[in-house]
Image 1 (cartoon, rainbow, N blue to C red):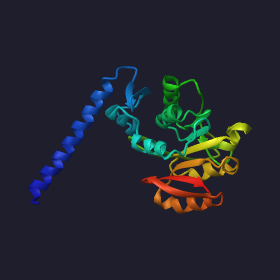
Image 2 (image 1 turned 30 degrees about the vertical axis):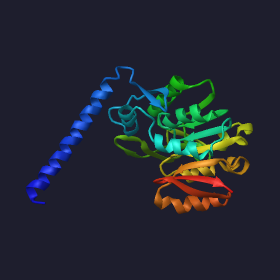
Image 3 (image 1 turned 135 degrees about the vertical axis):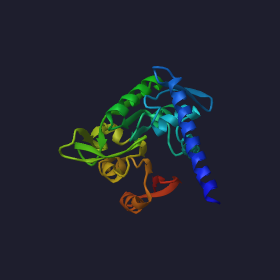
Image 4 (image 1 turned 90 degrees about the horizontal axis):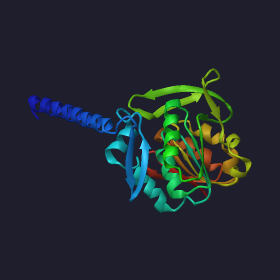
Length: 257
């Protein structure tokens, strides 16, 4: 390819990206001051609050596609028939509640615990629970999950993707940290059927704080595990009798034998 053609191609790519972003801004503006987008999944209507829909990856997807983020994989999980209805579900790293709302509607848990450490994102999570709750018990906690009670702080942040923010333990941190074992009721510890963990590399600490759940309930786990973390996570969960199967890129379903 001659240099002039390569430069033209690069210019066209940049122009297309600018036009795409401009269309996204228009779509976000058309939602009005309430910033609520109506989506539909397999004929079922939902209303999702997207306050950062002009710049956040997941919220922009919801506006553009009018369907759940990662709907293909949520459906695949449902088709696998490994999430029993009527049991306790945990959403660790709930973000604005995309998966929380899906779990509540399609898996009908007896109780759903969800955790999100970012305060502004947590506010959106609460709003989406209010907009879509079907009368079941959903308990949202604005905290970082870890091995024990304490505090944490923001470790990294990726512009344009609130879901990529990571936290870590910090004795001087301002974000409260709790463990799953200490947060759930004693009765619920024995009734957990499914746990989704998307905590940007902090999953081992979350699992350490779920020892009683892993030994008493043996729930199915859906964990985001990056390739360089997979060996450590596999080894940790093998001690509890778990093995993993990749659902899709860096997302693994672990089940106890």
